[in-house]
Amino acid sequence: MRVDGKQVVVVGLARSGIAVARFLSDNGARVTVTDQAGEDGLGAFAEEARQLGVALELGGHRRQTFETADLIVISPGVPHTIAPLVSAREKGIPVIGEVELASRFIDTPIVAVTGTNGKTTTTELLGRMLAASGRKVFVGGNIGNPLIEIVQQNTGLDVIVAEISSFQLDTILTFRPQVAVLLNISPDHLDRYPDLPAYAASKRRIFMNQRPSDYAVCNGSDTLAQQQIRAAAGRVLNFFVRPPENGQPAQGAIVTPRQIAVVIPGLVNGRINLDKTALIGPHNRENIAAAALAAIAAGGTLQGIQEALDGFQALAHRLEPVGVIEEVSFVNDSKATNVDAVSRALECFSRPVVLIMGGRNKGYDFSSLFDPVRKHVRKLITIGEAGHEILDALGPAPLMGGQTASDLEEAVLLAYRSAHAGDTVLLSPACASFDMFGSYAERGEAFRKLVGDLQ
Image (cartoon, rainbow, N blue to C red; front, top):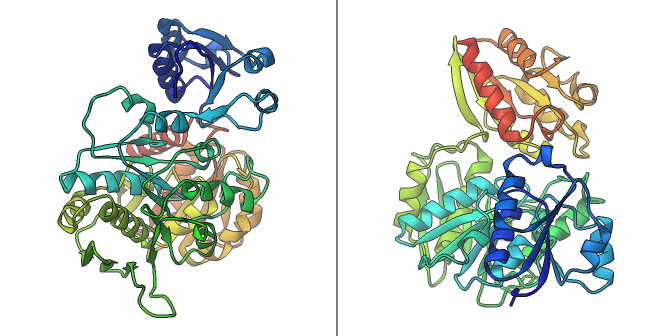
């Protein structure tokens, strides 16, 4: 693919947008970067773009700019259905994302990880498993390091491990991971997709360009995920949270509380010990199994997998312990932005939980959490735009009922006062953060600070 001399429009000015603009400019393209936000809302990104010498159109999109482009590259946060993009497609102008653009210039084998929950943990763990196996690895994608950043680096990589979101999959055309991982599918981003089948179809795209020589790793116990992998051309490796009813799988992994049995004929037949792992909960055992299968498929070893797992710590904002005060534990799970993530988090605790939920609803029915909340939660405290909606759906479930707080600070204080010795105060919002914070990370950092202030 050649970009020199072409008029390329980059839509979305953030980290991936800047990375794309830099790559295109360095390779002779005439670049225009456009963003709905004004300069005040873009911070240092606008100044960085100016230093690249590209054209800037901020505070809205000009249809003419889109319709006169040779190529349009959109950032993950930009809906691919906005009117200027629809108009450009009607005129035959190609519209792709940063991942697709990068893949056109990458020869290194790619391992791609997608799913509703667990992507970042699995991606990071997988990268470390391969590194501990002696492979030279780049870890990036939706995890924070755009793939386009490595295209011009002469790094001699053995493998690229990339977290890929549904938004990024929406704009792929030829992107082909030699190993593709689908962790799970549950309702998410229903403020962007019309329904669950449309969201699931987006996840299915991770397999669409694979060849018979490739590998497709999937959750064998997730019915919706299994529906998406049926058309995969690659060699399917399923992981199971319980043995299949028809007996042991011919290949794949079976997860138990203490170990994971891994069988890939011609590659490996062994076990991974879970006694030393810091990753808690059934969902993390699934993540470990997926990462191990993908690592073996990409050239990893059982020894490297075990070494990486034993030394791996929980990532920030993902069931992250942030303090213990008078025998009450505080856990930051701010990354839990959908109802399934909250359900999975609650399964990790055998003692009662004081749960803080809320934020901006992404289209969920919170009543699906009624049984997990009734089973695990002593008291529910809600915040944000969806606070009253959550309370209406779940308020009767906890032992001590529910309560709405005006902000996160009040919620933390109320949770602490409601907790008993041995309880856990868990921030697991089931919502986006954008009503009160700039990101889930900012929300998690605020929670961590508030817990620190209690000590």
